[in-house]
Every structure is written in C-alpha cells, then in structure tokens.
Length: 385
Image (cartoon, rainbow, N blue to C red; front, side):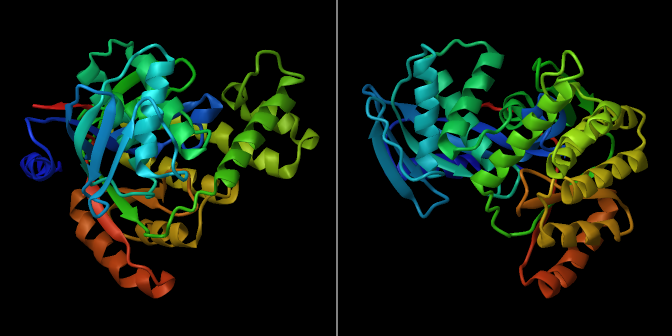
C-alpha cells in the first residue's frame, strides 16, 4: 500500500508553484528483537508498505516552508540559520534536527518548500518518527546533492531523531527505513551495522494498533537503557570484553545475579534472551518453520511483559486474542511499549477472523477500538519516480 502520489502532487499545487519531487521513507515492523538495538545487539525488522512522503521543491534561499496535510494542514516556515525548537515531539523539530545534524557533520543543506503526508500510524510503535526523519533526510540529501556514506547517513538520522524526541533510541528504525527491501526482513547487527537480507516466507504480518497513546515516558525508556548498561557493567567486572549486554550470555548473567538489583537483572535477562531469540528466529525463518517463528515471537512478548515491563493491559489483551485465533502462529507487542501496536504472524486466510475477534472483544474489555491491518515487507527510502 502506498500513498496516492498524484493526490499528493495536487495538494502541493494548492499551496505552491513549480514542479515538486517526492521523497519517501517507510515505517517499520520489528519481527523480533525489541530493546536490543541500544544494547548493541541484534534486531530483525521489515520495512512496512506504509510511508511518509515529502512532496517538495528546492528554494534559492535557506528557508523551509512545509504544510502537514495530516495535521489539518498545519503550516510552518523557518530558516536553516535560526533553528529554534518548538515543544518536544513537534513535527517540524524532526526536519530542524535533521538539518542541524547534516550541517554539523559538514554537509550544507538547502531550503525547500512543499507538503508532507503519511499513512504510518503516529505513536503506534511502528516508527512514524523515524519514517518522518528519514524522509526529511532523503529530501535534504537529494535536493542539496549531499554525498554521504550510507551508514553515516543512518547514524545522522539517529542523532537527529534522538535530538527531536529527547529519547536515547537505537539505530534499528532509521536503518530499516533506509535499507529495507520488499519481501525481505533485515537481520541487523546494531554494533557493527552489518546486515543480512532474509527472504520472507508466505506469512502475513498483521498490525494491531491499540489506539492507546504510547505515552512513552521519556524517563521510563531512558531508565531501561540505563538499567541495561548497569547490568552489563556488573558482568564486565569479572568477564573481560563485555562492553554491552550484547556480549553477555545467560550463564554469565545468572552467575552475577546476586550482585545486581532484581530490576536490573530482569531487564538484562530480557535483552540477553531476546538477542538469542533473534538469531534463532533467522534460522527457523530460513527453514520455513512458521510455527517455530511464532513460538519465538510469543516468547518475546512474555519477556517484554514480565521482565522488561513495557507492555500494558491493552497490548496484553490484543496479543492474547491473537494467540487464541486459529491460523495465528504468534503475536507480541512491538516498539518501545507503554501502548501503541502489536503484531500477529498468521496465514492470510486467518486475517478476517482475527480482525473480527478483536473488533468484538477489545472494545468490551478495554473501552477502545483498535485498528487492525495487514502489511508486507516493503522497500526503504528513496525518490518516487
């Protein structure tokens, strides 16, 4: 599924003159590997077939003028020479932060004007903020003729997004938005930035947006990152070479359990076991073992719920409903947690039954109406021809 690019260009003509170019970047669904990226571990996401698009043309000055079609046509204009942040999370902060990251790295940007639109659910755990940031980066890159190494560009988008949100997020979302490939998942080593494209078997990815705002409490997220760093530091006192939880085995963690707070142990246990699940997931996916894949995905949710404590009642309800639906191999929450989305991996024929079950049960149990839709692995960022 893609945005209607003709309609996007028509909306541009309502506000601006000239011929625009369209730059896009997708959201992402992480099959498995949650909260492992900032612990220098492994993740296994796919780029979605939902995206954010910048329909823009360059300006001769250094001003940015944008209209957000999804936000009641909110409009803002600012200068690249006076990048004043608005309250945290405001949509143009991502553009400002991206320009700042490029220019501080020695890559001058040019001004541009146009419209922005997307169909990636906002605050839903499928990385709408990264899609927005990477789409902005792609626009700056192509319009200004910025020649930058791909990995460096991804790191710059991470810097920009972290600056705009105040979160110490990892590299997975930006990496996937740039390097995703249709009908493939990405095994990403978040330390080395090496990756492998793994073909997807015939399994349908269903996204379940709980519509509970992902009040991602910046503090809660950053505290968990600090707890992981503390767990790694405790193990490193007796195990040479440990720089992050990525380097820790379950046996090593258990050996030092008595030397750390129980919360630090549980957070660390999630990361250590989740890294192992990612690598096992790649094996079962290559073998076409969809039931094995589903079991690993389900175990991931249990670990996120019980050890990492980033789930919530709404996520647990929709995941349990998915588990009980015939044709579903596995389900789990995705993203940072505290609300947002879950995913279910299932046969295509099971999608209507899953949608009907959630439509009937979720409002009764949680007082909210979920959005449930199927997605597929799509391509990473680029320019629309």
